[in-house]
Length: 415
Image 1: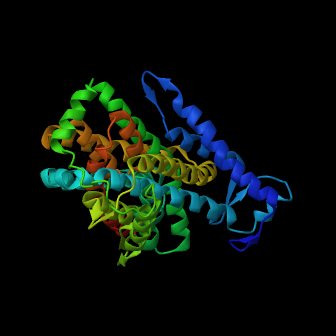
Image 2: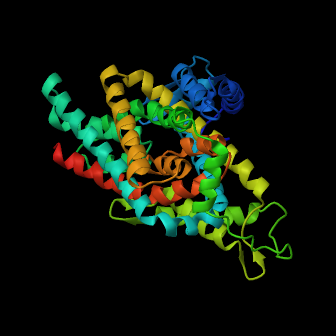
Image 3: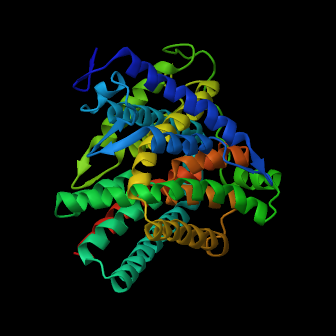
């Protein structure tokens, strides 16, 4: 069996397949542990994936290899199979998750966007600009205190910024802007170091804030319904469906979303996340074209959303765990924490006291402004409603464009 340019043994395939289910099983058990009402939920999968990557995988150039001595498993050593397999798991998960979120948020999205459009733009920009300022401040501090090269510090800190915001587009833009392969590697290291807290920090934030402010979640859900009223169902039950569960239309939207997301204007593209999200929002809004249903069943979307989030966290976690152990330095980790917390806290208070957004719209916008897919999954569970996805979907594209621009500007400044 030839995959990704290498001959794989049956034992290697079994090991990698076993890994996926083992990480999921242990991760969900960890996610169920609750302390003072706070739990990791699906993000428990991410923690176990990180540990699994740290102990069983080793970065080798731009690849990951199995850190085991078995001759059969070492058949993958000189191939890109492990990295490729993990990337496939991560990308499939991302497509499943964001497309499901788009379909679910679609019916109420445009009404919410019309009412809060200016607020979402301002909040998305504020979060990214504050993150960029925090990144610049950490860079200046590092140059003055540790005397490191200005160009190397700039590359490392912008990598940290992209990891703090869990932003693949910012990561790609930063790598494309630096002037050498060595600096590209430094960007990658920074991204890997900051990614851990970038995920966990926002996940915990959206759970802890409602507890700190002693929010009445029933009242908050009512406020959210007022600002994002559910559009009436446009389906009569007589529409033609491609299949009983909606797998067919889901796949069509995913394919078109991936294509739209791959279109580049300069160094910018919507990416798979943006393309699938936007197209699913449109299809979810219209629900049908003529007599043809173009939205999957709600039960299908909820299963795909959870399955997608699990796969995404698993693929990203294993790769992140391997790099994290190899390149970890406390000072860089602290910079990453600063770049996650400062823009998130600033955005929350700006949305609360200046924009006057209700709590759930506020937190949904924070998830979008931080471009945090895992945190959205957690917020949906915490809020007990899918409608928070509307605020995420509205803020996300603004933040996506802004973080790419800010990352490129920072790289140029610190050359």
